[in-house]
Image (cartoon, rainbow, N blue to C red):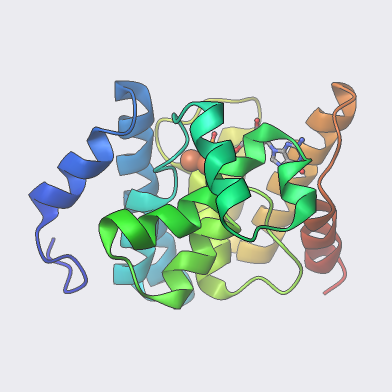
Length: 191
Ligand code: DGI
Ligand code: FE
Ligand code: FE
């Protein structure tokens, strides 16, 4: 399918492929596809959703030190630097895709920045990309089938369920829950 936001698809995919392992790349393609389809269903921009899907995990396989360099060099919130490293790829990715992939669209950049933690008051595109990340065809976790069904019915409800699952899992492992994730969940269930 053509996408007016992608000048050279082969080149973009090659750049992304070079940052990650095969499994992550297959996941990336799945997120782009699911994000496009959720965008069509819920009225977000399918072209932006697809691009955000392609670039959302650009830094996921980077060494921790490389991500830390970015976090120190750019003005990220202290809470991110001192928080869980699993969250870094989203915040760093939002900067790096501008520098290395010439992504300039603020909506796509925000969708990448918040794809892991979410936040209160997420935009439609942010929700679509975040949910696509959970339900793309290659994802396997207990409850993913139910979540895929829910995703066809109610975007906010599905995303609340997804964040709820993540929060419960983090609590089970005695890991910290990043405030943005709690705020995202609270916002979605109090609508
Ligand atoms: O990058 P992906 O694996 O495709 O998915 P993702 O960007 O949603 O990252 C998932 C990881 O992030 C998973 O290991 C759980 C973790 N995570 C998400 N929200 C929080 C979190 N970890 C902590 N500690 N706190 C959070 O609020
Ligand atoms: Fe991610
Ligand atoms: Fe992902």
